Image (cartoon, rainbow, N blue to C red; front, side):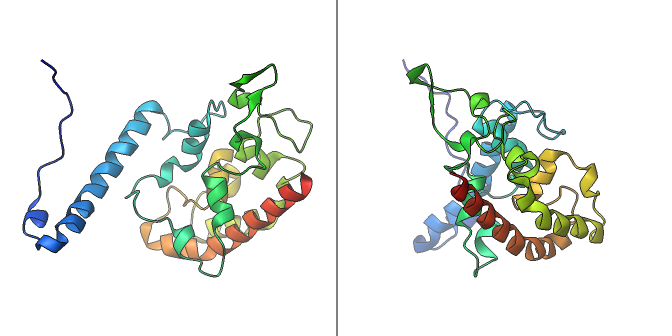
Length: 225
């Protein structure tokens, strides 16, 4: 006899059972969203249990790199659009979306490439080195944004703005943050200790500059290739 360990959906809540027939689908979706979000985050955090600690630079995959930069922002309903997609109507957020979702074709670690010695085998993540400097290091977002001698200058003005805002909101100084934390802020995430009442002010103050920066970085990379 075939058995299943799948527990099945959660019990129907009163908010759904008492809803009008035409609203039951929407009500049930609203009920499930935080449950699905919590389970998804739980599964990822099982894979990276030390993510709450200062992240290691020994990044092994695209998923690992993404989680180290953005794990602190993955704490709410994942069905809710992030502020960078909703708060700056006069800016195009697609460049930032490509960078955050690791789908930018000018960044080697975002590319799906093949090993040089075997076209049928994909190359390793750490072999995707920076194309814009002779350092020979893996082209992580951290390297391109903060460390690469060819591209890091693009972020100078944004770093100064974020540094001043950290001071104004009584947050840890920019120089005390890890490079992962610095990159996370540049990519539109909040400081981990910022009070909730200041979240809107932070986004309103930084997102226009972040979107401008990413657009300039993207144009710079396109002109380099």
